[in-house]
Image (cartoon, rainbow, N blue to C red; front, side):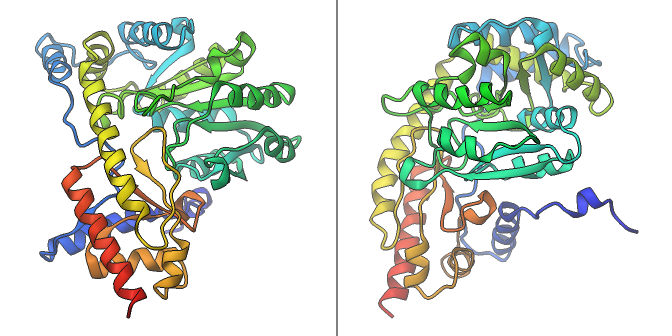
Length: 395
C-alpha cells in the first residue's frame, strides 16, 4: 500500500533512533546511560495527582469543550496576568493535548501550500516536520554559536519573502538553553511587525531559568506584538506533567477559533482528568516548581565544568531548559570519526552512553545531552565520554 506523500516526506527522528538502540542494548543486559530525556526526572507533584483523582471520583470523566475547560482557561489567564502582566480573554485561549499538539494544530489552520515559516537553527525536531505536514516550507536561519545560538533582526530581514507567513521563537530553547533578552526580542519583533509575520513564541521552558537571567515573552513588550503573537506553553516541563498531555495556545481569537474547530474533529477534547490536574498545577502551590528548578541549576553548574574539560568539547553555558548542547566536532575529528553522528554511535556501542546527535536539530557539529536525570548518572556518563575520547586520541 502506498502511503501519503506528506507522511513519506517526514524526516526520521534521530532522537528516537538513538533511544531505540539504547533500549536494545539495555535488553541485552548492558549498563546504558541515556542522556536523551526530554522530560524532568521528578514525579508530578502530589497535589496535582490528588486533584485528578478527585475529579474522577466526582464524575468528571466525560467530554469537555473542545477548546478546554472554562476553569482551566481561567487558570491560564491568571497565570499570564501574574507572570507576564498580559491580559487574555477565554476566546483567546485553546487547551490542547500537549504543547506539541497546539503547534501542530496552529500550523494546520495557518498555512497553505507553499507558505514559508522562518525557523532558527538549532531547532526542536518537530518544528520543520509540522510545517511540512501543513504544506508549508521551512526557511532556516542559523543561530550562531558565537551569539549564544540566537538569531538577529538582520538575518530575519534577509530570510523574509512574499511567501513568509510566520516565524518561530523558542526561548528558552530546546536544544540549546539559550534565552532572548527583552531588547533582543523587541528588535526581532520590529522586523516581524514590519513584514506582518505571525510570531509563534514557544515558551514551554519558561519556568526553568538559571542564574540572574529572566524570562521575557515577546507578547508582553507591546500591544502590537501581543496581537501579532501566538504563545505556546503547557504544564509538561514546568510541573513535570509530560505524560498528562496538557498544552495551550494564547493569541488572536480568530486563529484560536479555527484551532478549536479543527481540534473538535481530531481529539474532541483534551483528557478531562488531566485538565483538572492542570488547574491544580496553576492554582496550587508553586513550591515544587522552584524545587525542581533549583535541582536542575545545581546539576547544570556541576556538570558544565566537567563537560568543557573533555578534550575537543566546547559549550555555551545555557540559561534555561535542561539541556547542554556542546560542539564536539573537534572531538569527533580527533577520535577518527568522519562526523558527529558516527562519533555518537561509537560512543553508545563502546561506552554505553546515549547522546542525541545535533544533526536532528539542524546543528550537525553538536550533541544534545539532558541533565534531567540524577547527578550521579550524568557524572558517570561524562566520565565515560572523557575516557572514550582520551582512549582514541592516545591510541
